[in-house]
Image: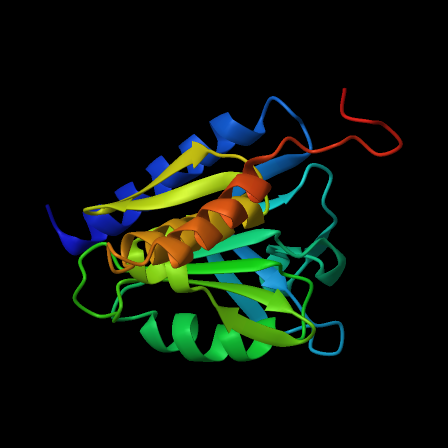
Length: 211
């Protein structure tokens, strides 16, 4: 299988699975090969995303040559780029430099061939004008605020439903820390077990008692 075939197949499978997971709620849709105008003041500076999760009723602008362009107000909640040698600079430098000033929430880069991007899987959240790299991605996993988990499986990103994304991420980190403890450190284990138990408690509905 050639590199373009791997690249395109990864995009198609990820988009299809994300669509299957998000379609029942009807709040988001999944688009591939999306051009986005992320900054109002730079209408011709477009960012390209291989896979984008966007609101169900986005506003599309007409760009140069009549191309449909996603408006700044409808920036993706989750954007994914499957990196190649040709897109490496844009995907890892230009786009991240732009994202910190936009409404994009989460950004993921993945090199299914593991030949041009190191590490081959990277994930970021945008918070308070800052692009924050997420540690679990170094272990091949990303927990989205969409309550979806992405796992690296050779040349694929496999999307599955999970619990509350940010809570699942914290649980992942705590369990990893617990597994790394010295077996004799019972105090440290008890502390981490208590934190894990607290996070796993059912949420109490607003205004309710949880009963």
